[in-house]
Image 1 (cartoon, rainbow, N blue to C red):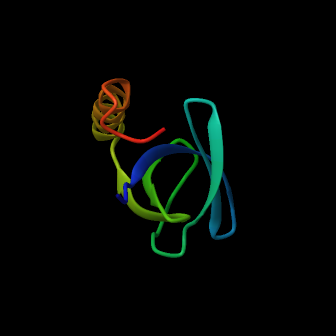
Image 2: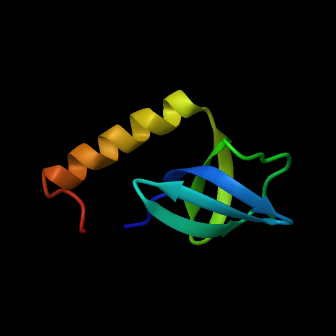
Length: 76
């Protein structure tokens, strides 16, 4: 199963962003997006930021993913 995970951009260095969610940080390429800034939420898949999303959408998606994980519907 492939999932895109919403993460908050914590830093931008050229075309690479440091993104975080729930205490986990990952670097992601920004080569597919324009105008990403610290504080933005992006959808991360396979090391790439593939879409910029608003914070409400990110929080709703994260809530759903957490519920699925809690119910054993996703692998840990």
